[in-house]
Amino acid sequence: MADRAQIVFTPAHVDSGDGATLAQALREEISVMYDGLDLDGDSMPRAGAAELSPPGGAFVVGYHNDLPACCGGVKRLDDRRCEIKKMYVVPGLRGRGVARALLTELEDVGRRLGYVTARLDTGPKQHSARGLYKSEGYLEVPDFNGNPVAVFWAEKPLR
Image 1 (cartoon, one colour):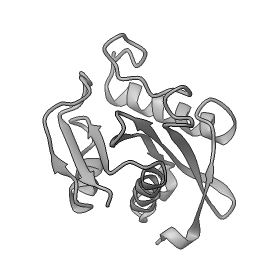
Image 2 (cartoon, one colour):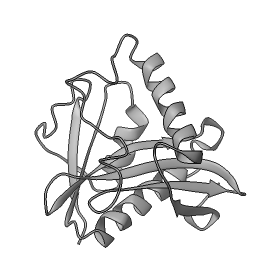
Image 3 (cartoon, helix red, strand yellow):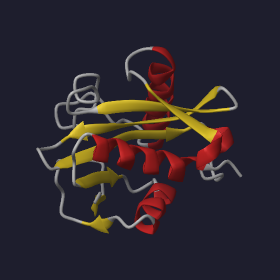
Image 4 (cartoon, helix red, strand yellow):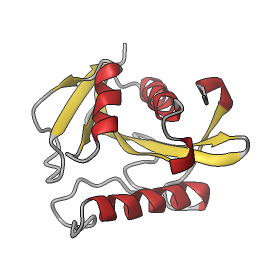
């Protein structure tokens, strides 16, 4: 079991280095999961370098045994709320607590950026993600971002 203490999180960029490699792996997995989805379509919420960078956003990569294990970002929605985006764990470390550690880290990042609420969404084929979010105290809310693939939108207080 990998625990939070075994994952070392570092600030990263979604468009370069290990961050870009992990974000691309996520894109490839999502494109297979949701065949035919245009991930860059006009109706898709944006979560690129502009959204996942300071001052209102951030992106992190988590390392396990010095190897890239996971990534995720925080995107500004408004002065009080952020959205957690691009959560990804490499397949070999799934089911070992890495996603939970990543979610906790992203919530901490959101707090450091001054947000009081974190929001997120997930699609119909991402059952384990939805289970994780519910187990971590995320409560369902109405669609807040117009994501055409999502079926579950939720939020959690960060304070």
